Structures are given as C-alpha cells and as structure tokens.
Length: 133
Ligand SMILES: [Zn+2]
Image (cartoon, rainbow, N blue to C red; front, side, top):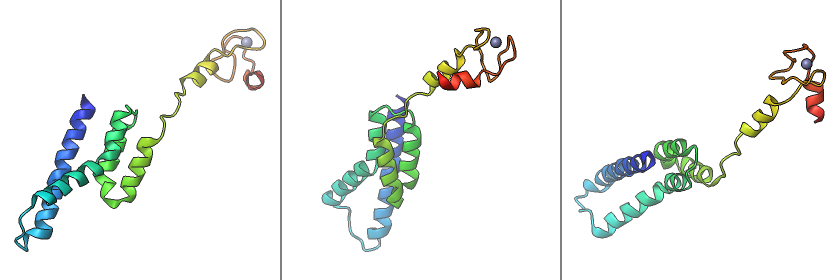
C-alpha cells in the first residue's frame, strides 16, 4: 500500500513538473495544450515512471530507492536507464543462510558451538576447520 501511495505521489509530482515545463516552453507562444499534447504528456509520464512501476510490481526490497532514483534523476536519462536496469535485476539472495552456517559452527576440539573465531569453552581457534568444511 505504501508503494502505491509513493508511486501515485510520484506520478502527480511528475505531471505537475511536466505541466510546468510545457507551460514555460509553449505558454509564451500562446499555444493551448492540445489533446494530442496532453496524451503525449501522459504517455511520457507513464514512461518516465516505468522503472518505479516495475520495481513496485516485482516487490523488490529496494523499490523505495529505485523510486527515488527514478523520481530525482530520471530526467538525466542516465538516471532513468540506471533505475530501469536496477528494477530489472533480481534481488540478491538473502545472506541469512551464510550467517546461520557460521553460527552453528562447532569447535573441532570440544564440539561446543563457536560464535566467533575462538571457542568460548576451550579457547581454541576454530577458523581452520571451518574453512575446510
Ligand atoms: Zn572448544
């Protein structure tokens, strides 16, 4: 739900920015905003927030960061491409598995669980055997 609100706010801000740009760019010439122009603006806005939409749709863990990059640096094109590529990458595999393996490592001498480098029971270093296993 937070993502939907974020994207909605982003789209509104984008529309306001685009409207401001169009009024500055074409307003001085007295040209009214045509239906074609408005449709183009809508398409551009949707296209602009495509990376954020993809990130939110895929439920990426860093969707917020992608939305921020998209919103703040999307206009630089490079920022937009970066946000798009980032939104299409897979989420990194959780590191919890590796941490768990380290935590259940047991002392080669006494068999006690070793949370760090040295055994808390006998004081022996447990790194060497951990590397082998
Ligand atoms: Zn030990």
